[in-house]
Structures are given as C-alpha cells and as structure tokens.
Image (cartoon, rainbow, N blue to C red; front, side):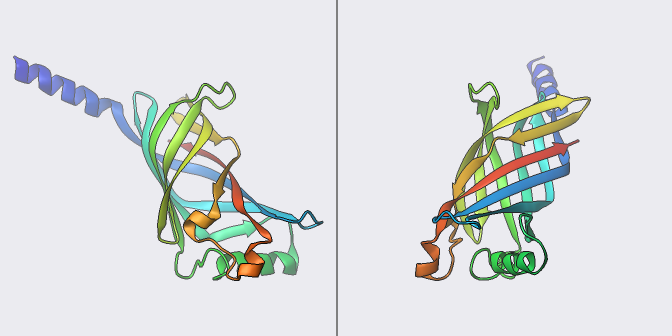
Length: 188
C-alpha cells in the first residue's frame, strides 16, 4: 500500500510539472556615458533566440533563455549612425559577437518580493562572454488561459563582471559600468 501511495505522489508531481516555450519576447537595454551630453545614452533591443520556462502548480521553478547577441540593436539612432553603433557593440569593443554569438540566462528561483507593482524577485545566472554571474530583478508574473506573461521592472547589471569593456582604458572611463535592462515575454 505504501508503494502505491508513493507512486501516486510521484505521478501527481510529474503531472503538475510542465515546460512552457517562449512565444514572444522583448528585451530592452540602456547604456550611459559618464558625461551628460546630447548623446549621453543609447538604448535598444535584443532578441531571445529560444527559451523555455519550467512550471509547477502555475509557479515558475526554472527557465533557460538563449539570447542572440548578434541581434543587439540601437533604436535611438538611425541610418549610418545606427549601423556604426551596432557594429561597435558587436565587435571586440563590447560583446565580441563573432566569438560569443549567444548569452544564456538561467532562472534558479522566483520568490515573493513584497513589492506591490512587481511582486516577484527572479534570481538566476547570466553567462555572457564566457563569464557567469548571478542576477536578480523584480518582475510581474501572471497566468491567463494557459499563457504565462512576464514583465520585469527596469534593473541594472554591471557590465564589467562579464568583461564587457570598451577595449581602451581611456575610452572605458567615459562609459558607465551599469547597463539597464527590462524583460518582457509570453510563454505557452
């Protein structure tokens, strides 16, 4: 009888665990120069190449997101300026996308935050340019008719932790270390 009860508990746990595939995603970024000038910041977007979220009882228990670093795009400028900035972000000055075409974020935990607007604290690891560091940020998470919606508040990461550095010591002091990010996605 105990074996039957244990088997039932194990089957129930398996039945409530599920994986949802990311359908749409939107990652926005902001980078800043130290000196406040007309062009003291840039912003843009980045695409998720693929992603999935592990769920149990309608709660996120994990997830993996592969970021397409070649898709990094400045949206605050256009034309030749945009092409030049995008090339600059992709080359050895910053992300080295020829050597590191993807970055991976893995969710390790989601807890209640106490923040009414963004009631969850998401923690995970970001692997970029061969370096892995922990990242935490506030988020709103909802489930409606089997579709998971996820929206983070704007949060900062220190680019230096991943060796995302303007490859000249003089040039790097004009760029702030913090990069702001905001993540939105749906999964089903």
